[in-house]
Length: 248
Image (cartoon, rainbow, N blue to C red; front, side, top):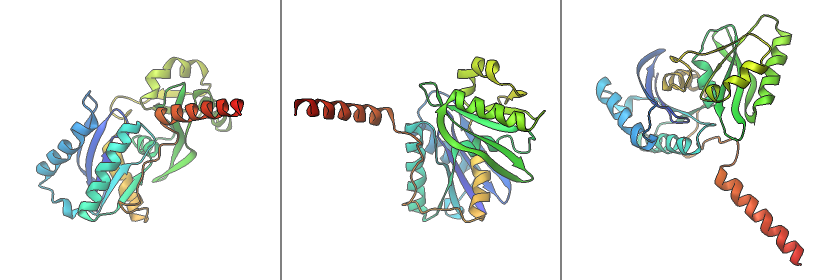
């Protein structure tokens, strides 16, 4: 089984190839250039280094969201284009599950935090049970205080057990987390605290084997909430509707 993994859901752009439980190549970049400029050149570099025939892959795993609206659209369009051209299925890997998988094997709870602005985060809570990733709190866009409260509740039910936090939301809210978390906590190190295409490819293998695939035509990103432009448009339409009601 050979899986191509793509992740452009956040600040990091990444491409990876995994085959039969082995990570053959991984290329992640967290620096300035937009993902539209980096994702395909990174894929081409891996293809050349591995002498990879893209026809030989079984599926394309893509970080399906939530995350950056622009980044998700770029990753989605790339995955869909490759899927259609190669006639390969897609594996949708939730972004936060991919992040949590970076810490495979830990006995602590895992809480990824992606900054969603306006004091909100994209987040969830996970744990590992044997070889499996278990979802304790499904991914959602919530106020930071909501997830802190949920983590503290888990701590009360499992005394002595801690939580590891990771993602680009950690540095944004680090002080608040340190003040309000009442259970033992750690921040993941630089080697595994951001999105990694290798984790998307690795989870992609597991999900592909269990039949969690979609066609390229069926795939669409999971944004979890409306974009700022959509919210502004909805607000404008609401104001116009209220004015029309007053005039009537």
